[in-house]
Figure 1: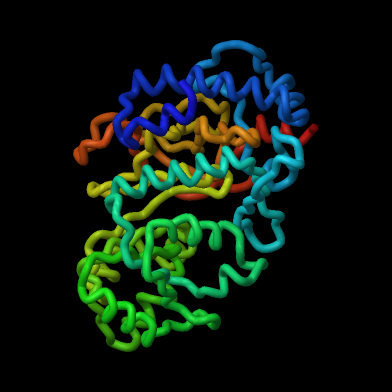
Figure 2: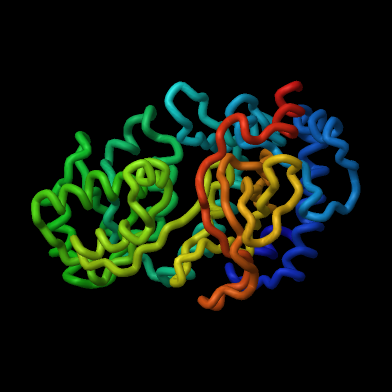
Length: 358
């Protein structure tokens, strides 16, 4: 099977046993491919004791710490084949990750996102309200994961309008014109979690304004750390948005620039679901063994999509818990999970030490 073949399968149709077999074959082959074409990755895999040419179980795949992608240029393609370079958001003073894509990998990213999001909103594009400023696409200092997220989700929208000004003020005139133009029909609303709360919800609340978005679908992601600092729960976020604009379909997603396209979307039961096109494992923070379902650890994300750079098996800096597999009440197959926080820098060592010694 190839990744193109995998994309022909529905985003939530793969059961555990079938997925495990497919992923062992695809990801073992991808590991050998990256070992052959990316010298730093080859050295690291050798130090980690990976056996070249073996059929590895998915749990045995070498993991690249996400921090390494902020420190080294890792690619498995010639420089002349680079079609696009993605960057992560990063924190202040920290170098962002750089992800090098050839045309095929960039195409896979878009097709993967289309498969996952279309399952939620349908095949038809919807009028789209973006809770951000249009300047995020014009200012290269802002254009990273934020700009890429807007561009990625914009393929699902028509009549795209931005709800915020350059100064990050709520543009009520534009919002109201958008609502008049769409006349109560279904619309897609997209934005980053903290920005929706800070610049959209809070301002509507301050003004005592309510706007009619009862027929909207809100997709949001990122920025939960800032909301946790304000003690805003997922339930309070949904209730607040419902209060000011009547929107009831509010879906969070989990994703990262290092594996753009392979997002995990929240279901109607409030669980994040991996799709057929990616998987997660939760690792013990002391010895990197796989945690049992229901036990907190650090999240590893894998996908056969990452062909142009060794990002097919990434150890993240996020903590989470796998809640179950193939048995969510929503009916979707695959693992479902929740994010519980971020790891402290000193919490996870081991494979990071191996890579940092290269």
